[in-house]
Amino acid sequence: MLSDKKIVLGVCGGIAAYKCADLVSRLVKEGAKVKVVMTKSAQEFITPLTFQTLSNNRVITDLFAEPQNWEVEHISLAQWADCLVIAPATANVIGKLAAGIADDMLTTVVAATKAKVIIAPAMNTNMYNNRIVRKNIDYLIDMGYLFISPAEGRLACGDEGLGRLEEPGNIVEFIKRVFDKGEDLKGKTVLVTAGPTREIIDPVRFITNGSSGKMGYAVAEAAVEQGAKVILVSGPTTLTPPQGVELVKVTSAREMYEKVMEYFPLCDIVIKAAAVSDYRPVNVSSQKIKKTHDNLEIKLERNPDILYELGKLKTKQILVGFAAESTNIFEYAKEKLEKKNLDLIVANDITRDETGFSSDTNAGFIMDRDFSMENIPKMSKHQMADVILEKVKQLIK
Ligand code: PMT
Image (cartoon, rainbow, N blue to C red; front, side, top):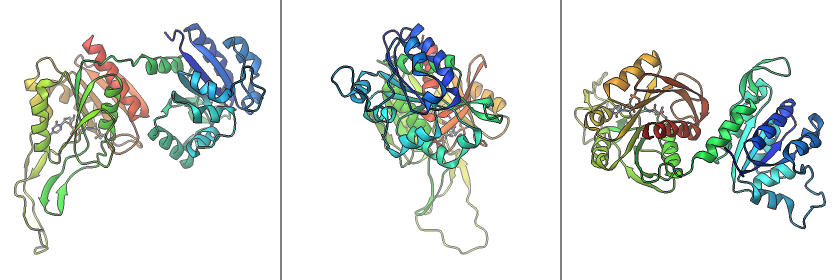
């Protein structure tokens, strides 16, 4: 339920604006208090009266209108809101927000608010895939804005593809999840691993992989937000650690193994998003290896499989693994879940654009011990972290 939650809905100028009448009606039925802000273009598609009637509140359309109570309206709205939802969000408004432009009521309220901002884009597929629009979306995700990816289907312009506003029912569910987070993990200790490992060959060379750490850092941040004590065991990354985590820096797989083993008995939940190197050079050269032969052979030996070892040791802990796969995703994920004695496995397809290594977004599925799966459509890594924690919480219950 959204009882007494204060939601500002910003409606922009797109044909999907009509769907927001349904959205307001659903939010009000859920008990939310809704105030609607409309851009000038939005009013070309639907009248303020519709939203006024459904929300039982005056609709705000003009930054310079005479305020009803003698207060600065965009500031008071920004402070009133528990959450701001922009739907449909056009390429124009997304661009303005990414550039920090605040030139109308909606953009000034966004600029002035400290509340969570949820953006549900809707536009033509080619516009949505336009590199500048994607860059703006990625930037806003980095800045902490939450995005509800548009759905695929037939668009108003006649094209088929990604760009339809997500259904109002799903938008409401998303908003509920944002509010529901609460402090559900209070009292729990969560160990998260993130990033790559480095296996040293000589003083200037090492074996590593393309993990940026973003997925693991997002999980750590989401767990802190939900009240958990979080230990983040991180391979080398360039990321700023989320506030509130205990950061344990490691370089090699063996160091990660040692640290994880040290903290494991204290933990309730372990989420292993790190991309750990399975092999390391047998010999580490103390001097830089010189080009003396045409071919150079480096003999490798196995690193410990940290998750496999945890699976053998686990008592009360919930173990969540990741599977980064390029083929037979389902089979390999299932195999790892069983072999490593996991409670959940998150499989991500690393062959897809904008998912897996280094991207800001991810997609895949999450599988439990009964092999039942939940599909995870493309979303920000932060949102995916919330989905994973939601599953973990269901197991705890
Ligand atoms: O860091 P990002 O750029 O955001 O990218 C995120 C990611 C793609 C790295 C992440 O989402 C992911 O999939 N991480 C796991 C990558 C991986 O190593 O998968 P794997 O299938 O090789 O390993 C399976 C599981 O066993 C993983 O949870 C891994 O942490 C763990 N493992 C693997 C090898 C090993 N020696 N010890 C382990 O604990």
